[in-house]
Length: 258
Image 1 (tube, rainbow, N blue to C red):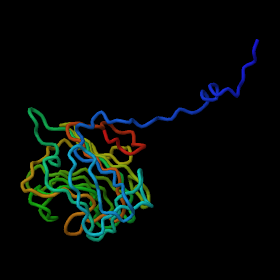
Image 2: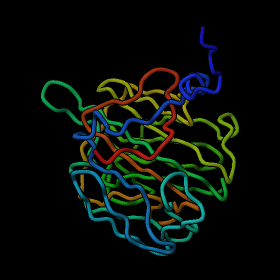
Image 3: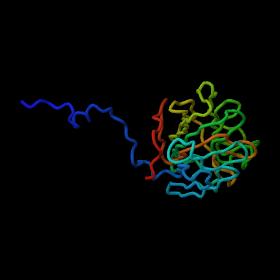
Image 4: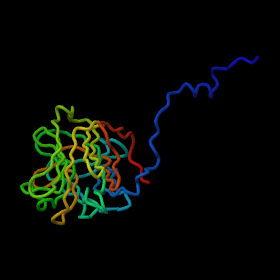
């Protein structure tokens, strides 16, 4: 009888740990309306949208790509907290949660962020046109931000009072110089807010149609809601709620382009 060779590559392969391989394609890609990998040259100001919508993205202030600090890919969006943001022209792609047919349209917003500071008021992303336009005293259509050590997602159903999902950054364990995954998922009835894989709040309130045409912004809003840190892999999906329940599986690679 021939002795078994334990050096045989086929046997050694069986001993190797199995690693989950990220999907090469996204089954919901046809519903993706914004996909920003934030890749590019160091100090660059080009931010291509890899979704089928191919939105034009304009860097405002000192917003730029940084190649030394990133979550995935070659770079991330860098902002210094002083007048920087990305601006995308008004589009129905960013009017979320509104009625379509006999029900409200599901959506998912998600991104990675790493903060240099948790102080002040810092906006991750949002859209004006809630109760007015881009005006902090009269509201936004929706906004995801940090203020006074609390993480908020707010959206306007009507009038000047927002619907709010929030949690203290201390309870979440959010600190500086660390990458975290953030997500908002809406199934047409319930909005669920997630921080780094764990749900921190829900709401069954409805969304409001915009009352004025305003741009969609990433990383800052007039007059003082500017991010001091980095963002990477921003994706918005309309028509699909990707996450539900108390936890989600945090992405382990850049989002697919198809």
